[in-house]
Length: 183
Image (cartoon, rainbow, N blue to C red; front, side, top):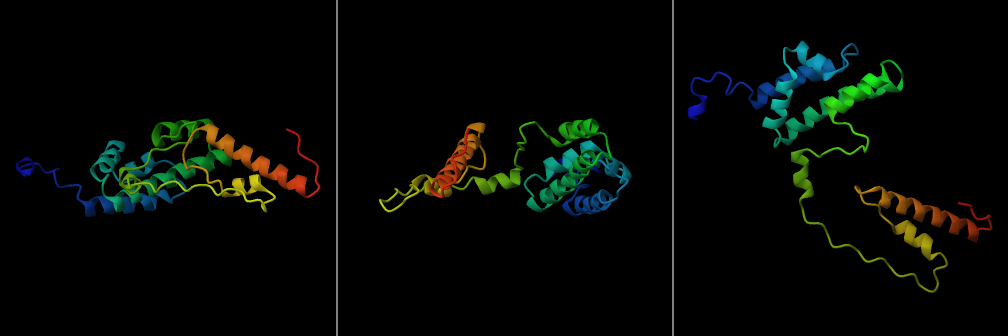
């Protein structure tokens, strides 16, 4: 604790003090005239680097981080809606979202540290798919119905899922007397 002697800022941003500022910022987030997080921070006499400091300091505190991400989501949603309903310039909104909130064209977002701990549990062994029996008249439909897509992955998995759904739909229509779909 030698570093805290004489350092007036060492204990300034306690959990409770940070939480009180988050209360004030969230109240401002619901104000229609405040569109960005930067505006709200300025209203409570804070700045973006301080917001980054809070995110680093409290990255292992799930409650505070959930609150921080919730507030960020309020502001990103304001920008999305503003662009969608043409209340704001869509290009400017996209620029702000990309540079301040980490939006990218792939739509992937990095998980916060406090949520990654939940994912580090060992995965259960994959289940074996059941074999079609002689009495099963729609084996591909059964396979498509039991297919569970991965939460993350490349475009190949999405295309494979779309192909299986299309195959199941075509097979279903063939058995019900409907003409087969053309690709």
